[in-house]
Length: 195
Image (cartoon, rainbow, N blue to C red):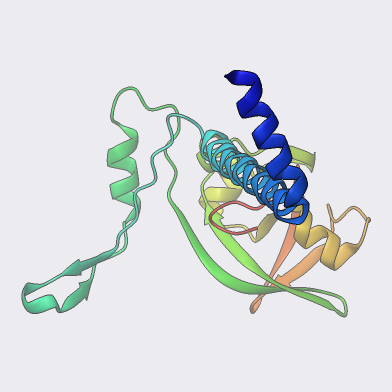
């Protein structure tokens, strides 16, 4: 019985060779498509997981947002103040608390300019975000308290404004402010908050 069914199937395949080949081709393409989509999904999941892990397992960012009022109208929540950051830093179990503000800005050095995201932050920001320096230094506590015009660049801004040169010790302009470059961050890649 089995052999007769096999002979019948083989003769049907020989009679309709084109249809049989197209069927096999369809199955192969379908299986390849499913395997490809599973791998793309796994790769995307791994990429997102790596980005989240790069933030740290214990990182919490709190930002003022927009409060929704009755009837759907919204009012802007006030920004955090320095005493808000100080109050949070007194909580137990926290390794680093930093206030920070981000804004779009154009950085200018000589004839070169680059549109980027500028981050104004306190010293603990570097610990909280796990940012390491490739060269230079982080601003001192005295510089922070005095509001001294110093800055630390990321690798993208360095590449766009200085090429492969070392920016530490130079002055650049961010918006209308001139600042001394005192540090250069190690390459970390694009984060959710910009460059």
